[in-house]
Length: 138
Image (tube, rainbow, N blue to C red):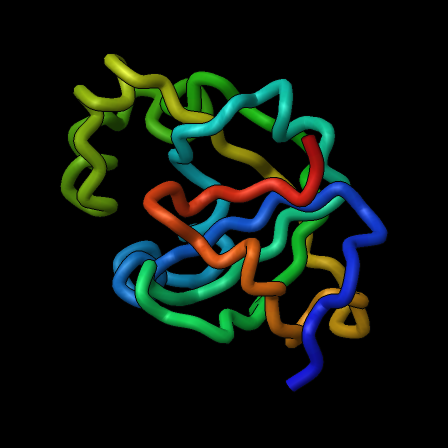
């Protein structure tokens, strides 16, 4: 599998678990919501790269590439609005945590299947630690 040698764009890498995709219904819904991250920093991103795996997994491959149109902070303004109970049940989100530690979310479109980063392996320095959100820029 080809590895990404260098990033030609500012990218936010978001790692999700397979369970999150199953709960939310698809990869986009799992990737676009509720991240403990800095909105101003995220807004500098040209693309959001979605990877699927756990902290222990190596050889993580980009499964989808999204072009963010808009970022939200706090995320619950966009995601939950008046549906906090539904959000909590359907997505297993502790909405009290969202109030205490506001999250970000984005809306965007999937980039065409011939995107440069798609189906390529992340360099090991971007393998996720505790935080599932990584940046390819400062």
